[in-house]
Amino acid sequence: MKHPLRYAPLLATLLALASVPATAAKKEAAAEPAAAGGAVATVNGKAIAKAKADLMVNMQKAQGRPDSEDLRRAVKERLLMLEVVSQEAQKKGLDKKPDIQAQIDMSRQDVLINAYLADYVRSHPVNPDAVKKDYDTYVATMGDKEYKARHILVEKEEEAKDIITRLKKGEKFEDLAKLSKDPGSRDKGGDLDWSVPANYVKPFADALAGLSKGKYTETPVKTNFGWHVILLEDSRAFTPPSLDELKPQITQNLQRQMVDQHVQELMKKAKVD
Image (cartoon, rainbow, N blue to C red):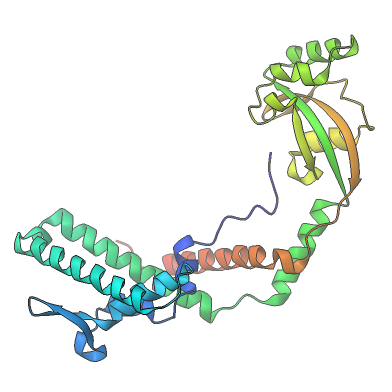
């Protein structure tokens, strides 16, 4: 089954960064000297930049934790621990090992990429007209009715025909649903709950829309999943979510498309030998 507006999230890290002050990721990536913004502490003579503490605090705040002295104390203790262990690792020369250097380089690259993409999204806001256009397309696709259906999915057409024959002889749809290979509905008597036709593949949706209440398909319905016997239990008017409700989803989807296109343009411009 499918859903036309089941949008994939826009690069989870990107959106997380977008909620943090714009300079936070850049400060971490640039590794500014502690003197530029002060230090929260020193470990064996090495200063821990205040920018690191601010970044960690902002990350906690983005997750809903309120700023407080306790939070900043915990952040400072965490940074002290990280610095102590990091210095020990460097004493052993671990930072000189090729595989470790590669991991450090990749982590730095990740930070820079996320900072760049977050900055790109902030400087290229989605046009409200584009959001409205996408919403109108969604509404038109969903239609004005939704259906409560059951189905039995089998591998072969002959199996579906046999189920239809047994239904005609009086066997219950819910009992025969145990023969279905759909794990999501098999143990619920084939129940698919309420849904609009657009949520189903076309052959299934067309067959469902052509049924009368209480009737089942007397001819097996073939989809890429197999062969279906479909029962329509009821139908009702469908009211789609409002534009305000779907705006965050639609905006994320448009941002993802915009970022994907931008990255592809950068790829085309790059000289790759």
